[in-house]
Image 1 (spheres, rainbow, N blue to C red):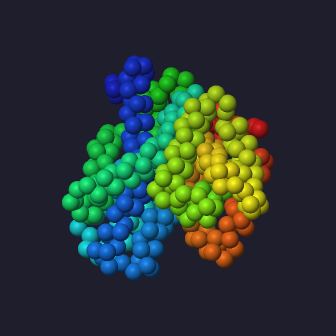
Image 2 (tube, rainbow, N blue to C red; image 1 turned 90 degrees about the vertical axis):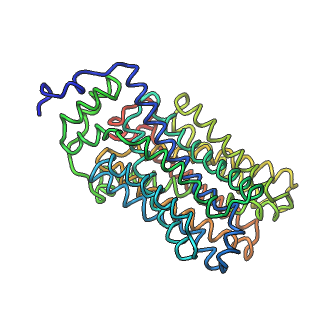
Length: 445
C-alpha cells in the first residue's frame, strides 16, 4: 500500500489534542506496568510470616520463594527483549500483562509451596518482559524534549508501587481478616485494569520502519506522534537485529556501558536496602520498620529530584558525579571504624538519595543508546545483568557482614560503586535533547 492509499483514519496528522491524549494514555499504561512491578515485589513482605506458617515453609523454601521473582526477571528480560525486537512491541506488551493477570489470579488458590514458587517465577518473567518492552516503547513514543523525564517517571512509579503494596499489605494483614491468598491476589485487580487499558494500543512506528513496514510506520507516526517525529522515524535503518549485534564493533560500548553501569548501580543498593535493618543495627542505629522506610523514603526523593532535573542538566551530570560521591561515602563508612552513629546514618541517607538518583538513569539510557532493531534485546540483556548484580549483593551481604564485618563489607560495596563511576566517566554519553536516531548513532561526551 503506498502512502497515497492510506485509509482515511491515517491520512494526515491527527490534531495536537488527540496526540496529547494518546501520549497521556501511553504514558499511563506504561507507568501502570511499573507500578504493578513494584507492587508484586512489595506485597509479599507483609504476609510472609502468615504464609510461611500456613504452608509450613522451611527456610530453604522461604529463600527459594523470595528469590523466585528475581530468577524470573533474569530469564524474562532477555527473552522478552528478543521477542519484542522480533515480533514487535505490541504483542509482547499485551502478552506480559496477560501473564501478570493470570499469575496474580492464581495466588487466590495457592495451597502448596511448589505452586507459590511457580507463580512467583511467572510473575518474575512478566516483570522482566515488562522491563524489556516498556522502556523501549516509552523511548520510541516520547517527544525528544520529554523523553528523559517520562522514562524517569517510570522509576517513580516502581518505588510508588512498592510502597503502596507494603502499606496495603500491612493494613490488610493487621486490621482485616482477609487471607494472605487474597492480599497477594490484590495485584490481579491492577493487572486486569492495565490489560484492559492497553487494548487497542498501536505498534511502535519505529519498530515497523526498522522491519521494512514503512507505510504502516508512516501512517501511525502521523496519527500518534509529533509532526517532526516522522522525519526521525524515516532515518531508522531497515535491518534485522540480532543478539550478536550487541557485541559488534559499532555497539559494544553501548552494551558495556548500560550493562556495567546498571550492575554497579543496583548491586550495593539491593544489598543495603534488602538488609537495611541489620546493616543499621550493626552500626548501633535503629533498624526495624522506621530504618527501612527512612532509607526508602530518601531513595524516592532522589528519584523525584532526578525526574525534575533530567531535562535541565542532562543525563551525564546526573550519572557520573553522584557515583563518585557514593563510592566515597561508602568508603568512609567502611574505613571510619569509630564514626559516631549519627554520622553513619547521615552517610547512609546520602548514599540512598544519590544512588536512587543515578539508578533512575538505568531506566533511561538503554532506550536511548541502542538502535530500534536491538533496543528490546539490549534492554533485556542489561536488565538480566543487573539482576545478577542484585542477586550477588543480596546473597553475599549477610555472609560478608557475618564473616568479614561491616567495615570490609562497606569497602567492597564502595569498590563496586567505584567501578561504576569509572565506567560511566569513560562511556556515559549526553543524550539530552537528541532524537533517538541521534542518541543511538554514537557517543558525545
